Image 1 (cartoon, rainbow, N blue to C red):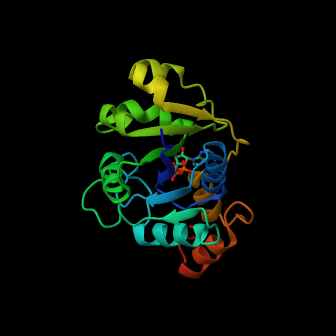
Image 2 (cartoon, protein in one colour):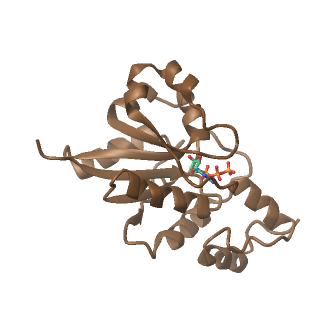
Amino acid sequence: MVEKRRIGILGGTFNPIHLGHLMIAEVACESFNLEKVIFVPARIPPHKQHDVIDSRHRYAMAAAAVADNPNFEISDIEMRREGPSYTVDTIQHFKIIYGPNVEFYFIAGTDTIRALPTWKFIEELLDEVHFIGATRPDGTSVIDATLDELGPKAHEKIHVMEVPEMKLSATYLRDRLRSGKTVRYMLPKCVVDYIEKNHIYGKE
Ligand code: ATP
């Protein structure tokens, strides 16, 4: 049997994109033998409405951050869609584009994996994609209860990926930026430059 191509998808709010996102994409590429990882910024994240800046800025920062890695790509599919950015719709889009000979691996942090039971059409999504849960140092890495809640399909399709855990989140970075603290070496330099140039996450 011919092996299917494997493509990773990293969906997120990217408010802003940071080294935690890039690191889990890189490690997933290597660990799961992915041909590439497509970053998909959500225009309207269904689970995050508070303190989310304009999607055009979030998209531009993510595009700049992935530009120098030949294994990374960015997609504007969720930018172009009206209404909440549901992953189930995004996967349908990629399935049409790439055809039947591709397996998709949705990369997320284990905090996101824990929230999967609340996702729209999660049963259908588990039929369509694998999930890779990157460990985070926030006590969320144990996902056994989530797997049990979602049933046998989840045990088969959700994989935990050990990564060098980074206590870095977009919330933490926004807080630092607003209090005028340094974020150097926590974000790619091009993203720091973009934030400064466009006066986003301004000091309060
Ligand atoms: P926020 O702090 O605003 O909630 P975030 O840093 O978690 O944001 P998102 O854009 O929501 O960033 O994250 C996209 C995906 O990347 C999510 O599945 C999240 O769990 C994962 N992720 C983010 N930061 C890390 C990290 N440091 N280690 C592992 N996974 C991460």
